[in-house]
Image (tube, rainbow, N blue to C red; front, side, top):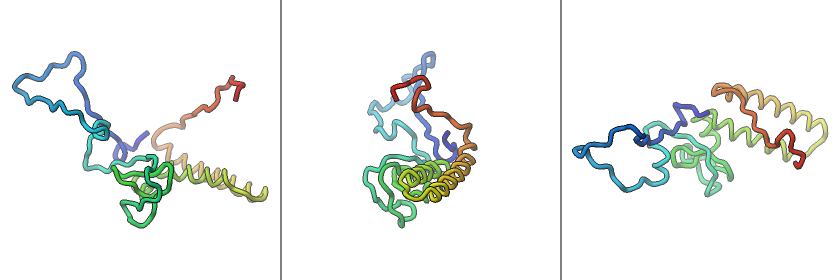
Length: 154
């Protein structure tokens, strides 16, 4: 669920059936369609944080100007690419999602002894509990089933 103060998108409301048509004295609506980006949301003075797939990996953060962004999912502030830390500072829920991705990928690519695996698994569990504290603010956990229970083909 989105943080309403930081990352919500408002959409245009179209008249529905049963509403009155504009009178001829009212200004006519501009028939030119809005660009795709504006048709999804209306710009406000509030910052709008999102996660999108990077078109240009390694772009310098538009907020701090110090960090370079990665490839794959990256943070955006309005239409500008921002680093993971700036996303975390601006929208802790979205920043934690990118942090979770990083932790899980680091665990998946780990090499080591059984003791190192155990220590890494304990750290992964600790991070999962921290992430759950952030996510619990916006609602209960959602279970995403990758495989159906009775599906024997996977």
